[in-house]
Length: 448
Image (cartoon, rainbow, N blue to C red):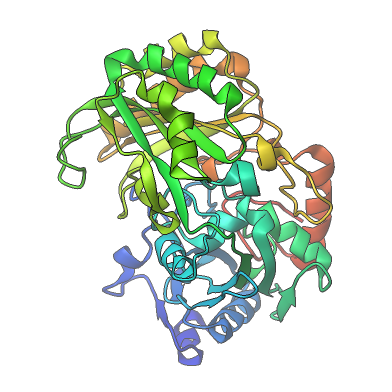
């Protein structure tokens, strides 16, 4: 059977080079990423995924994955590879008694948050409304509640996975436990995940939002935020952020074409407790203040992440510390650059708490993660953004831990920077067992 015959065995579709839909079908969420598959498969069911895996193995091809299509830049297209898109697999089931969601592989963040919210529950959602939940969770998952409930990958209760030999298996702590360990933080290296079961948390409303000041106050405000988080409870997640916003229609009119320093926060507790917690920040006289009690399902609005594809370039690193002396060089490197955004998120709390029941990404020891990016509509813009990203990372180099967080690592790199040595060796053994021919091409690959 050839690629042209595969579609006859699917409910979904196969798009080949030369087809009218070809150029659109191979796009990632980041429009600056050039994905170069030999074919694109739009799966509509687990059976479609099984058929695709078996066909790829028979034809000597590799398989890479897109759901929401985020963090696709590091995928290696040097070998003949099918692109398996799961965006049509959007089924969501909520069990409010067990506080659990079962989602298919193409479910995006906002629909799951809304479905859970209808039962007074929340999943450990990140800042983007249209990120694929599967890739987000398999890659770690830094949510607005990470300091209270830990990494989203460790909220995975079970998974349905098509292995390289074409079997559809259900894996959890008791069944295929090594596979279950490996996928929770190991990304798409070990199989084609068709569904996840995720534990939900009993948070219906949350006190959250953003405080904005003019960018000229960046150093003052970031120093204040750094001091403020020293006493912040684990029920509060926050970040310090600088924005240089273009004058474009997808942004709210109140912020278009302007530059700001922000503090964003989400607090699990009563509005009175939350208001008391952030009062020292409000005393700094923000120009805008959106912090209020909101449905937990609306948390993706706080960071104002775009909900449609854009071309961009960026990078993230884990910081060993963020002392006062780090702030001035960071502000200087960002100001006047071609970058849109730089943020530093506080970690710690449950994010740094280990458990024998956790997966490969057991915890993140580093207390901060930094991410920066800029829009790259053309080659000249890309060159400028890449230069300024390097400047920002250079400004905090003394505090760079040397470790990376998978979902924020936007460029190819040594996966040993993501996992400790002993963990990486165990991952290699799991890869050799479940995918000895390296059929699956994850964005940050572990080879057998």
